[in-house]
Amino acid sequence: MTDIAHWLLGRKQVARAFVRESEQQKISDSKTLITSIGAATCSNPPFPCREFESREEKKSPMASNMEVECPICGLSFPSSKIEVHAEACIQASFSSTSETSQESSLSKKSSDPETSSAGNKRKFDAVESHPSASKSNPTNFFGSKSPASTSKKIRKDQAAAWSFLGKTGSTSKSNQDQPAPNTAQQSKESDGNTGIPLAEQMRPVSLEDYIGQESILSSNSFLKNLISKDSFINMILWGPPGCGKTSLANIISKRCRGSEKWRYSSLSACTSGVQDVKKIVQEAQSTLQLRKKRTVLFMDEVHRFNKAQQDIFLPHVESGLITLVGATTENPSFTLNSALLSRCRVITLEALSVKNVQKILQRALKKLKIRIETDESENGEETSTDEESEEEDPCAEEEDADKEEGTENSLKISRQALRWLSEMSGGDARCALNTLQTLISSHSQGIIKIAEAKEALQRSHVLYDRKGDEHYNMASALQKSIRGGNDNAALYWTMRMVKGGEDPRFIARRLVRTAAEDIGLGDPQALNLAVSTMHAVQMIGMPESNVILCQCAVYLARAKHNPEVYLAMNRILEHMNTHTGPLPSVPLHLRNASTKLMKDLGYGRGYSADPRFTRDIEYMPDALRNVNFFQNTG
Image 1: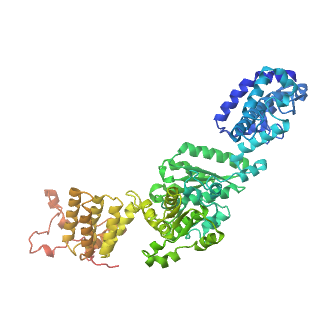
Image 2: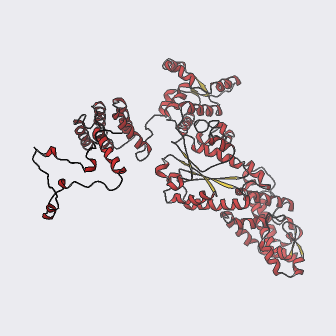
């Protein structure tokens, strides 16, 4: 017993260095983690230690049966196991003592120097200079109160280390009590400026709190039923910014924390790479083998991964090891590879309506205890919208309830300012909430009026991507408006593209194509005007060329349309695509006889360039002699 205590003192400095190094590194190998945790538990380890068994087999039977008391925790172990157990016990005790000292120094609630970090240091130094002290009281060698308290802390460390594997046994309570990182409940703990954006504080934690996207989250929708039953599938959430993609993933995260069969992990393609995904996959494999829990991986901005990087998901999604939930603002048809799309369900989310954005803002104001008031001076300016405001105030009853309860706050916001934020945010709840937070931060009292809201939120840009969906959608809308002869719509879509920052040369090229395709022979001057417009745009540039583009678009929409050439061209293409067998060859009399051999073969025989006979010659192949592509034969 005495020899073991002296040996432990000699190993003290080595153990301290080992603990410092282990605190800076995260144990990635689950087997090593399980072995160290099982050894640190001191009793009833979760898994048998094969290393102990192999060492025990090499010892003699008498040495294996000799019971030796551990000077750290006070428990008895065979002499063949005591050395390995003592090292693990030292590591666990140092870790527990370090955490205890840090908590006591931060909270400053304890006045006893024996329980503070300085007290622990002095106590440890005293033991180091007087080895006899450890002999008289081995259980207090590292400043622990008793073997029971040390064992309790070790089990607590074990529960924290096992938390990534999910809820089980002693770790079940730890996982249940762990709060969600992005929940509205955290923000309730502090009404002050926590540094967390208001949009992050107001994220919903359940489907009942989720506002908007009624088309996919209605009472009978398949997606709502799947989430309610914790039956998650591989899906890609596609929608504009601020429409609720990350909030929906946050709800799935909350459901996974309370589930016995799911584990949740999240990454962002903006800050992560393939190696991070591989690490998640390794953890998912360990979790599935040890805890029988599958992993939901939320990959934000998944379109940031190129198509080669996206292949990392394929085998694991195919095998069911991970369930992928991706979020993207780009069209998955263009940004995701087809193999991944075939394994995932694309869920389309729309921009939030003004009514839904106003609901979200009113919920935030209720949480911050800020009342909504109607400014009488502003009523006179906007009397025409009074009826609309009544329809667009879904939380008016909650607001009245707050007034009846007597909730007071020195800061208020006018109803017109709230409506402005809802309308000008462009269906982006994050933009509306962050702007509201800016207004609140810049005002300590009084009423936030519509003038201040207009100054804080101006529609300086429109949702447009020169390489994304909006680029092609608006170009299509412009051409279809001209084809339909709607000059008003043609002008609107032209200016939408100009305001969105589209290359004016691209708009001009589309107008040239439209002039030839849709106007055609109805107004032959339309093509000349479109080509002149393209040249003018190249010479003048923006912003002066915007009126040139608009003038051309309106002219084309009002011009006479005759697309028969374009339609006949398509009929010929369709005929060639559906023709069975080889296409008809050129008749001999239409071929050019450039050599004597060709003339002998009959090339050009029977053809005459005399205008008196040119109209009597057949120019179509024999198989198409009676076919007229200008006539739609159905």
